[in-house]
Length: 257
Image (cartoon, rainbow, N blue to C red; front, top):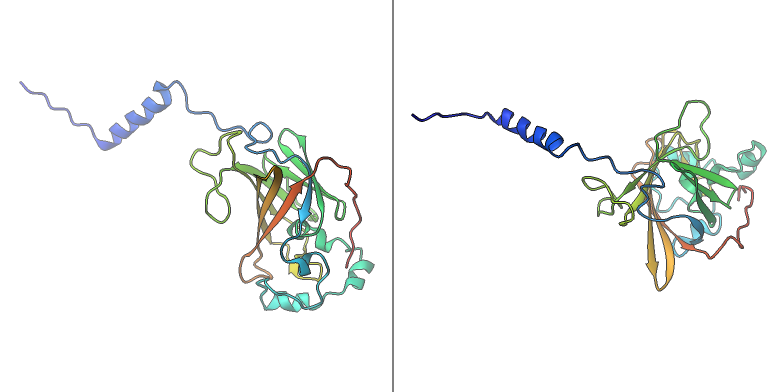
């Protein structure tokens, strides 16, 4: 006598899942975050290298110079209203030092760990401080700040708009990049000549560390999406070189020009 047994696809898949979860003892633990999960070391003192877009970064461009920024009509109109004296009188000297513009300025960075899940980035330009939170958003409403609310994660390098995570996430110590997404920023300037970004702008950044001829460099890819003032993504790249120590660290206040 022959006995035939039919196993439905649903029961078969369920059995495989049960074998994976329980036959192996337990499901894989999520990868560590923050300092424990760091795939690269970004701590130390870094100085910006201005080797591109010099005329927009080392000096304040003239009013109305919007070249290479995909401003829409409202963005151009607002940019043409730039008045540094008015910003000064209203206490808005730091409009070009917000998160979406700060890293383009000639500056030094001091990167440390504020705690195990918070990376701290101090900039001597404008005496600004950014906090990257690996444990989620800290936004609680209220008045937006220049540096906004930044959520960080470790990712592995892929050729997809800079960097992106693979299936399963990065492996600590095996290389990759830091991804930071910043929202709830106080409206400010992408350039010191009044090129605007609005309250709903989203800044996405990818920090990578590379070594070349014995020197260490931080490569930053910055992506700004702003439905208010931009008609396309504003994508830039910034470079920083690791310094031996903080002997050249010299924080200065915000300036309108």
